Amino acid sequence: MKRLGILTSGGDAPGMNAAIRAAVRTASAREIGMVGYIDGFAGFVAGEYLELDDRAVGNIIQRGGTFIGTSRCPEFLDAGVRAAAVHQMRAAGIGGLIVIGGDGSFRGARALEQEHGLPVAGIPGTIDNDVYGTDEAIGFHTAVNTAVLAIDHVRDTSESTGTMFFVEVMGRTSGAIALHTALAGGAAGVLVPEAHEDIAHLLDRLHTSIERGKRSHIVVVAEGDRAGGAFAVAELVGRQIDHPFRVIVLGHIQRGGRPTARDRIVASVSGALAVEGLAAGRSGFMIGMQGGRAVEVPLSDVVAGAHPEPEYGLLQLAQTLSG
Ligand code: ADP
Image (cartoon, rainbow, N blue to C red; front, side, top):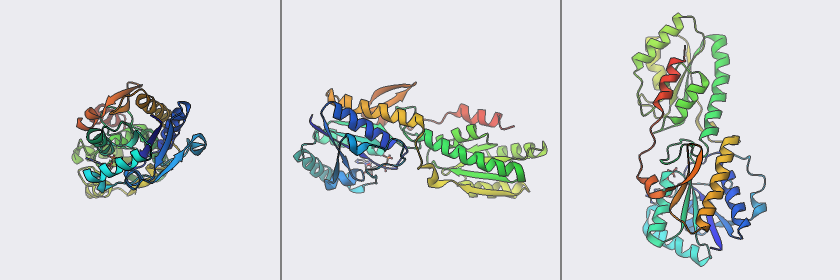
């Protein structure tokens, strides 16, 4: 294999750049060239790419987002579009593809392997941490840190004024960011899409903590919570508890920013191992982190597997510790 392609697809996540850097430099050490497709599968379809050498990936390990761009590309669901893209890729002498993204992106990668025998490897990169087969997708650690930092700021004003805050974090179908943020941020309550905390239960705990004289009250709500997000939860609670409150939606702030050291490390290891696996002739795998170790997980298992369940133990612990 003389030349590989790499792309980032779906939602961007901090640490994607570190993964690209590691893949490029690992390939370079093996005298394998690397190109970066612009804007995910869209650039792959259009044949638009950058030549990536060691210098092209300098000074990006600390940058959030993805410097080669990402997008959603609905036309990639069309087998004819994929066939034309593979034909074009092979004509350019590119013999394999690394896809950094979530399980949708891996479905696209797997289709290329199944339909055209193209060697492919996946690296999980999504702040939602909802990819089967890995404990930590690139970007999750950074997103949680960003949300916790925001909650620390909010707590100062909550403690000073006694205002209750409902903080909405990302997670349309996954409560992972919310759960980890609530525990690390010392929240009074947390609502996630997967497990619906009874509003009555939340109200009880808020009543009790107000009676006990607690001043700062922070409830973390995942955007996909079944009650309908932080504004809806605040309204429900506000009807029952006469207490000043504010709603904060963190939104895309959680996507950007400098990746944490942990995300850079996972990204670097994953980028390197993806290239090594392909160079050794393997294909159809994702580099996952399991119990602190990097492993190759078959992409067939990843796309067939259910989204990982949130750690309900964390939910209970966050509630017990909320005081
Ligand atoms: P994520 O990778 O974060 O799960 P998406 O589900 O939006 O994000 O998928 C990203 C892109 O992957 C899609 O826009 C599409 O180009 C491609 N893709 C998703 N599912 C498939 C599929 N079943 N077959 C081929 N390509 C797919």
